[in-house]
Amino acid sequence: MPDALDPGTLDLRDIHLPEPISWWPLAPGWWITLAAIVLIIAAVFIARKIYLGKQLRRDINTELELIKQQYQQLENKPQLARALSILLRRANITYYPESNIAGLTGQQWLQHLDKTNDRPLADLAFQSETGEALLSAPYLPDNAELDFDAGKLIRLCESWLTSAHGKTQVLSR
Image (cartoon, rainbow, N blue to C red; front, side, top):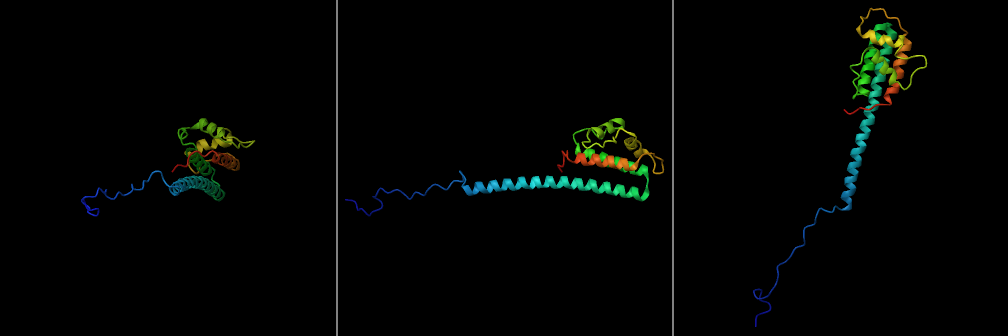
């Protein structure tokens, strides 16, 4: 009779370890962590977009104030019209990046400005004697004589810049 304690004779199986713990399905804590990461990334993206939009508005307002101060000091109408024309061009290219605004000239440029101005002034439009100064001023020397109402041109440009900011489509830097 075989000895019951003899390991060579017993029909024993080796120790079986449990299967390793799987990563899938994820524990609830991992799902919460993933959701928090996605929310943080979305919040950072939205906050950056808002900040850049406000920064653009601050930059444009600062430049406009600088242009107005320079005009008050020098009272140089060609320089004022040139600076406002450049500011409007740059703002247009920024606000409407998918349009071919940079190529607009003459009456087409003024029509575009009137068409995109959501806050038109009752007595003013870019397609007027006041707005026409924007067409010729960039090409005139500083000592040239221009006859337009500088206050009206400033108000007209301010109204366009104020209305265009609400339509910001860009800001992907």
